[in-house]
Each structure stands twice: as structure tokens, then as C-alpha cells.
Length: 253
Image (cartoon, rainbow, N blue to C red; front, side):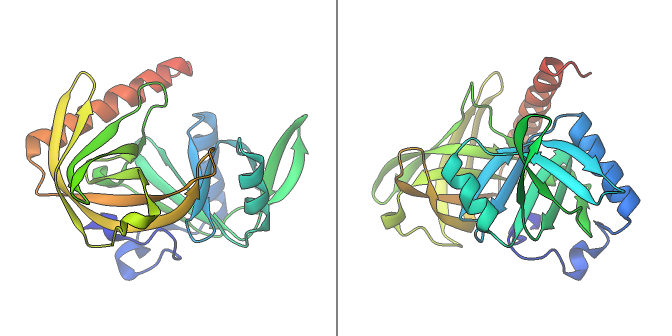
């Protein structure tokens, strides 16, 4: 399954080699398109244990420069500046875009704080429908109800969702969640679409992600297990609707 790819290792393997872009001109063009559409970008660092949300604000091929907005949390920004590897994940026209840079530099960009980095030497462009992951809306958050987790019902926050899987956050560190663990009969209510019901398999874990409260939690990347086709269609319709609404707010088509 494609969701098994380890986000926090250099993209690689023969399976993904054909999706890698190495041309500097093409990389710059793709990133400019992401910037022009004001796509949301997630920047991961510290082996995926920390992240911040951002947008691209400048792509300059001749200057070998990429500029992104700073995150909203000052401490997270400081940690990002100290990191020697940042992995950026976004999408454009329902195509997953992923690239990495070795470090960030704090700059003042047109009167606003920002991070500068070198343009990536390669970029992963996955053109399969199941790779498109929608970041869950903040104004209408999604939740995943797990009927039996540690002997009780548990509700996790949905961070992102795709036809192939879902990112969940809010698990307590002491719960001992493990990669490969299956969570049965999980339920996600999609507004205007219906209830998605499926088992989930934990594919990756990011531990000790700090919340604003300072309490550590665990974020889990999960894949749907034997999800009915009708429920996959529900997810796809939901993604299309939210994506269309976001583009309309930005003045796009």
C-alpha cells in the first residue's frame, strides 16, 4: 500500500523513482504553481516529531531561493531553525508534492518574518489519486471515534484524510500505540456526505508533538483496511467539495 512510505526518510526506492523531478526549472515551476494557488504546506522536522503549517511566498530560480511563511508558534519556529532537515508536503491539482531542504534561515521578507531555504535538488510528484491528502478544515474539524482503545471509547482529531488513509492526533503517549496495530470499526462523520466506517492500521507514529497546552501527544498515520468502495467515494466527494470551497475563498475556480 502506498501509505506505507516512510515520510521521514529520503524518497527513494525504485517504486518512487519515476515520480522524482530533478530539473531545476521544472522544480521551480511546480513550486511557483503551488505558491500561486496558495496551497497549504506542512513542514516536518525533528524526525517528524514536530511540524508547522505554512505557505510558499517566493520561488526564485536564479537566486536558488525558496521562501515560506514562519509558523504561528515561536518555540516551534526556533526548533525548525535548529533542524538540519525539513520535509515539506503539499499538493497541487490533487497531486502530492514532497521535497526536503537541509536547513532554514530566518529573514525579513517584504516586512514580514519568513524562512529562506535553497531550492530542493529533487521533488517527489505523486500523480495517484490515493496520495492526495486533504488537511482537515479548522472551522469544521473532523473526529474519528474508535469504539475500543485501551478498553474504552476514544475520540481522535483528524489531521488529514485521503481515500487511502487518515492522520489522527491526540493519542496519549502512555497509551503505547504501535505501528501495525489495527483499530476496529472506526467512524468518521463527513459533513454533507455520511459516516465512514472502517478498520484502521497504524502505519507510522510521530511522538511528543507539542500542543499549545504543552502536553505531549502522539500523531498516527493510519491506512484504511478493507474500506467499502461506497465509503471511499464518500471521502472523495468530501475532498472535492472542501477543496472547491477553499479555492472559491481564495478567488480561484
